[in-house]
Picture 1 (cartoon, rainbow, N blue to C red):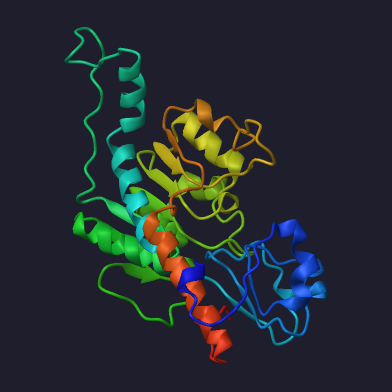
Picture 2 (picture 1 turned 30 degrees about the vertical axis):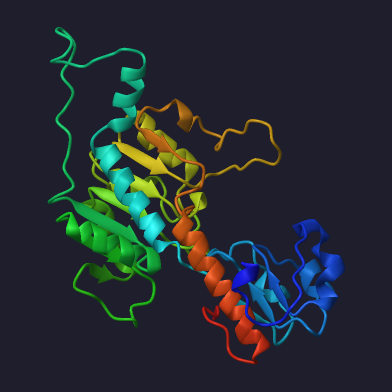
Length: 306
């Protein structure tokens, strides 16, 4: 990122735990977290707290000193939308199970006489995609799903931005309808007090038994036990999970949840990397560098968080 910054400046790279000692002397803090201790240690020079990502769940906004701006960075919508499309294709075609079986020499009928014939795979064309959270990611996903001839239903909290012709966009009051109609459900919401635990046992029971769930937002939006039970019992056909209920604290092996999702053959598991692409990194670095330049020129940064 440093070569992208045009303004003359000094940069300092430190671990999160060591940043307190330097906060009194900086103008822009690029960080994924901001705590009350950091707010108290900040000096009068601090003008901008810049996230190199979109999520705000590790930002204590009440701790921001008066007058300090907060901005985040997107640029991950293409990467995540492509991931969701790929996950839906893999789930509908049962790629996880087929890959695991073939690695140990197991072939289904008709290749192996006497073996049960697998159900025919689903096509995305003609299926209904429900999108919970119609922001940057949701809109990018809708454009791609539209090209696959899917019907699209979406929910967003704020409808003031208007609707588009790619999705039937409604407010949170339409949640039950979207859950009941969706063949695929993509969760792209931000985590906050109103979305934590939004999808629980009641909501999962509204979904078709043939439906698939894809969560690329935050695990806590979906009740862990309710989701595991629905998948283990076959009440839900499958899920692709990129976000988790537990994360490593050190280099030792870490199961990503209290429930054994890793034992379920109908779950595609990835380690919170749906947005990790070259395009995402380049886009975010360019935005962060641009905002540093804007602060140096006394201009308003981009992507300010309201």
